[in-house]
Image (cartoon, rainbow over all chains, first blue to last red; front, side, top):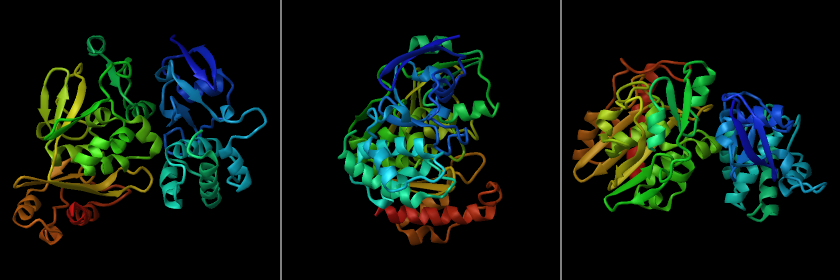
Length: 157
Length: 252
């Protein structure tokens, strides 16, 4: 079985995995980072979004071996100690969650958007969140949170 | 590249971004013995302006194509088309080479390749788009052949109009119209189970008069079009004309 090594939330992590192991399985089951969720497992819902080498991807549609050597950020890696990341803080402030299941993916997807566009319009946010589904249908506050979070980030993460 | 080619054949398959192959593997519709990743092969993710053409490296993601200054300046229709594929995360991982090699009958790139008259460049030959898309998931690629780039001639005018499946963003019907010299091409994706096809009657009408009115009265037969939960064949036939009109209008 192959050994994979990647930087996860700033720390080098290794593991021996079956070749078919998905990145999300490696993160959750091998590293215990269960903040990344599996919703649909068919690359539609976006609950599993993480950053690989700086861009958001669906970790249910990426093999762990594909991320070998990469720099991975999960929801656990955003906050600085007890200080929430500005996007997390914006989700809290604007109540951008209801049950919370989709939230890790929403936040990481939103951070990727904010890195590209520090002042996204409501339309741009809704277009960007095409691949993130909220079964509570709580999009209205999510969109507000993403806009506020992007401004708070000031275009950089 | 030599190492990748040598590892192919038998039951091995290439993986680029994995946005089509991994879902197919999860459904047990493909069970390769090995996957050969192109991620470590240098030089496959470049975009080059060749004057009368733009060459896009096979490992360029849809996000790269959509955001490329060269593509935006020379073939804005191609950048816009790439920006409408799937969702942001799919675009961040999925590649042009993977999409073209997969030849999903509802994918966007086949329509762009055929309408623009693209050439598919592999590790051993060049294949014109007209001979490349041979039907659902079918291409002339050998088991160990690797797409390295897609070369698009720069059109005078081009635009893509898609009626997207609201869940997947795959084309229920997508039409790329491209005008180059005196020739016009109209390529349709998503509507037929056989994949991309041209509508020569529309092309001839547009060569006489490049206007939305010219194609408004031209329909395609629903006889060989797809019927599924998204749309039946008659509706898809209707959409082809509507999308063709919108694409011509968007050509400006």
